[in-house]
Length: 497
Image 1 (cartoon, rainbow, N blue to C red):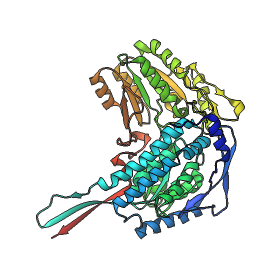
Image 2 (cartoon, helix red, strand yellow; image 1 turned 120 degrees about the vertical axis):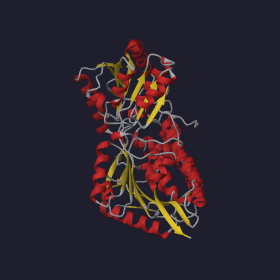
Image 3 (spheres, rainbow, N blue to C red; image 1 turned 135 degrees about the vertical axis):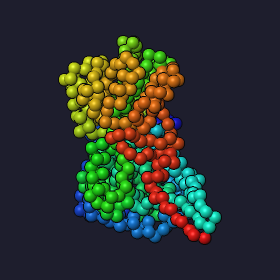
């Protein structure tokens, strides 16, 4: 735990060196066009940096460099045990520069400094280290063959990987992709969101310091419709991995089909149900978890528990507990270690969230907590955690991903009704179930169409468990050994002896 105060963080922010250039073949560089865009902090509206705005010519240079580096074998054919050692050094450097990275993350996208430091940085280093540790412990296969034949099943790195990552957990989502992609020997081009590019740009230099060869890890900041599209359409990108909205995920699949049929692995939106049965073991704990499930990271979480399904027999008792619990989640200056709700990432997202709050009013839902913009005098983008009761699953606030701290409370009477409401969504990323009945917990978890189901908690799991969704929440999985499937090809070699 750091002992830094708000004043300490604010002083560091004044002297922080912010790098805004692209990173290709081990060096920072400008875009071919010379274009840049302003990186504005949602904390107070200050200008953090002019960031390079890459486009198709930069993508061409980066892909050509990544391909040449991959083909050279300097990383792709390096012994797994040696790649592991470099990956562990990379993770160590992320930890050693943790306070700098946390400050960049907080200034760039508005999350509380305590979360940036103790959740994002720590988990990012863990993702890199875990993937590196795993790579020399994964074995290939020998097929069952006649005595005069030998059948080998081997994994090979897929080649050039383009990773397009979101703005809500910029460092962590990057490392969820970088860990298995680099560990398996690929060259990676990372395209961070234009809303929060700074930590991705910074860790590129740390990768070089760790010993990852130039050209193995390139970073191209810029917009999705320019450099992101160029990477998605590039004929020499072998795999495209993405975390972001379902709308963009669908478009990336189109681009893959229009180009070289590159593999596309997507983690997209969610509208996760958090189901509280009358026999939940601890209603107060369930209420506290429900509040945290929507307020953490300002609700800018793909797995946010944005639909709270409560059994009607306890609803009058339970909703006030959630309203009381949400009071402890108060927007404040993200550089204050005591703050647990920061700023929304930018003005566009803030206005989008406020628009959904208005839609809740218009559709007849009952506002029972929050609902307003706050701290406007700071120049930042802050919205109170908000709860609507009396929500119908057909309302916009219950159907559409808001990506902000807006909770919809929906009543139900039976297990079957709860499951039907929970599954009545185009998404299938996560869900939670609160019950003391073991059979009910198992049967409900099986019935829920979601990639992660948590019982008597919200948002469980670590690097050992796969993460991803059903339906329009995506395909493939991040984390765990299952993530390695996205970055390798299987080869069958059959030998006649």
